[in-house]
Image 1 (cartoon, helix red, strand yellow):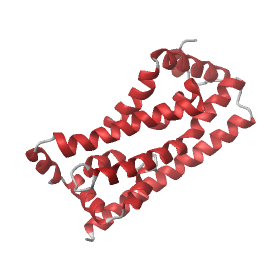
Image 2: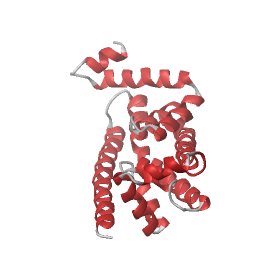
Image 3: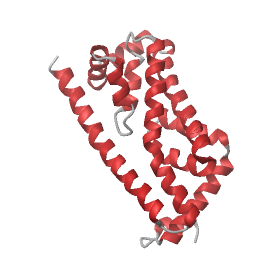
Length: 214
């Protein structure tokens, strides 16, 4: 069965899922290191696909260490690119127009009134509004050195949180069945994703409350 057949099949067995993972792994590996770094980079600029899936397939294709490193390089470079564009390459008119947008203004107020440690705490959560926060940071007077520390630390922790899904795919791919190790990592992954979604929503509400009550 090909990849699209597996996806279209509503009743997918563990064996078919393992075959699907192997096909995707082969395609991902064939794209090379440029894709392993480039896809997380593009995801940071255009957050359409979840980064934790890219982390998972990078780990599956290149191992835990290099899979983590390639994803970290890509997402960190993308985050820095957004900041540098907003800070140094965009025009004054463009910045002024963006600062007047309500959804940007609330993040600007929050960033300027909170400690960088809190920025790290928010950005390290996988489902937090990282794109809007990174975008808004480039519009503030935050020092580049402070931004780099926030980015390097928060991205490292966030990817570490995403690693259990990659380890789940590795266990399932190697065993060819849903054994104890795969179930353990899958359980951890599910709990982390659920906790991240809840934490992300709580942080968004706190940001909105803090900016509206200021």
